[in-house]
Image (tube, rainbow, N blue to C red; front, side, top):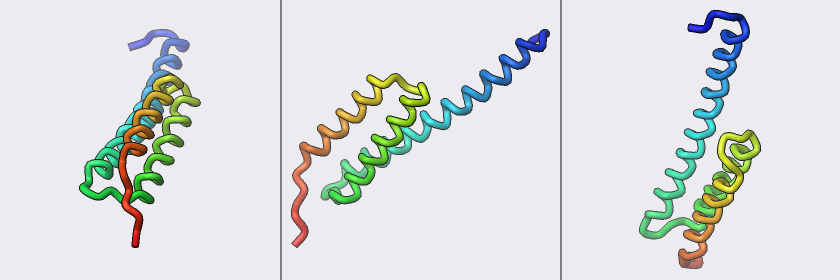
Length: 94
């Protein structure tokens, strides 16, 4: 345990930062999971997939802005899932 006032404050601060980081990392993980599950479906719904990708991009951008993840990692993940989606052939609704 810390002894001085400044180290006690530092401990509180680092715990809050850790909570904040874990929140964003879990949010990213959940969005990625939902995209993967919708892409693994036999016939993915194009509208649903596009909504999830925009949510992923939004989440990654916010996490990068808050310095939870590096901006290059955010861009790399966005690019990865954009490529996977562009490779899909969506059938037009008749």
